[in-house]
Length: 221
Length: 272
Image 1 (cartoon, each protein chain N blue to C red):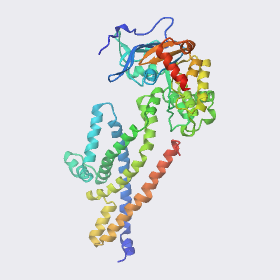
Image 2 (image 1 turned 90 degrees about the horizontal axis):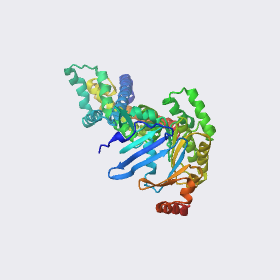
Image 3 (image 1 turned 90 degrees about the vertical axis):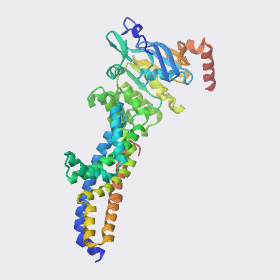
Image 4 (image 1 turned 30 degrees about the vertical axis):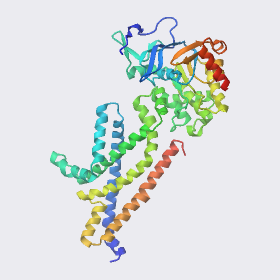
């Protein structure tokens, strides 16, 4: 069986899996961004309880393995009465985990906005909320985009783990094909190529374009 | 540590209430005393310039008034009302943020490094406060902002971002942005210190115009002695966290009484 024939027979399943991988990736990214902004802001709160809660969250999700978190959300939470569909559990676990890393990016970027910007906002008598949303975050966003480019690729690759709770993503389909055909080189070789192409030719250009667009909006380019 | 607040009036009343009063104001950074029991009144419409060597606390005076620094003792009054404190049961207690925000509407500030918002155009910078803080409609805010940009000679650059403007142009936009809030007191903190010599006059001309045309109360920290002498009603020489000497520009620059004032002026004038 040539590789072409392999693709003709199994291409459909792999395409279906790829679609699911992309959907999982997009949803996980949305969760990660929301979590990152929320906990990044909480980490900067003046209230020690809020700050502490955010620190605990970040430490737990960064300090333990994504796979274990995935299994916890899918296999352990039901014991405590919280049943999640495997599809939801999948992107949620990836998003919550990556969001913890993102929270540190958000926090760092906010802190690296020059103090003069904070002071100018005070001098215009803005509330602290307006100061954050209108002045600081737009500038922090531009600062943190390049490291987010890395993190978003990590999110894409992280979604491969959802196959282990039987979400029928690309990795799941590839493993099924491998078990039934024993064509490991072709099967996992294809997976390698698809993940690389998604990262290199879709995620990276989109992030670059976003960086470029935002730099222009801030008047730097 | 706790100060007896009963000697501070709850508000200033009478015929000649100062626009700004620092009463017995102390500022410390740890063990370092930056300002020591400062008393300073600024009358409505007065232009007061603060000069002195670096580290003398002169910028701190402006930053405390803008509430960018907290104070460790004393009370600051603006337009007769305490800024740093609020009355509770007939006593002055440290102000909450709501009170500070109400009094702070009367104060505007321009900074050494302009601090324009880089993600907004010149016009956007000027409209931000009126729209987001004062609640003006965009149309009203734009009208007000364009008028001020025109006054500072920046109307043509209304759609440029700060990164496309020179230092002098940025500072002029920053002045317009502060004035768009219609403050009663304007603070200028070394607004020409970061500028190339050939564009300093762009900014000093704008301030000169404000002195002539508005009933603004102004406090200015500067190293430009010629400009200070020309436009100030009063000059205060700060030394070591206190006012060493103050008076009209003519008196202070031409007939200083204190030895330290003479030394400072000699050193500065030599350097020029």
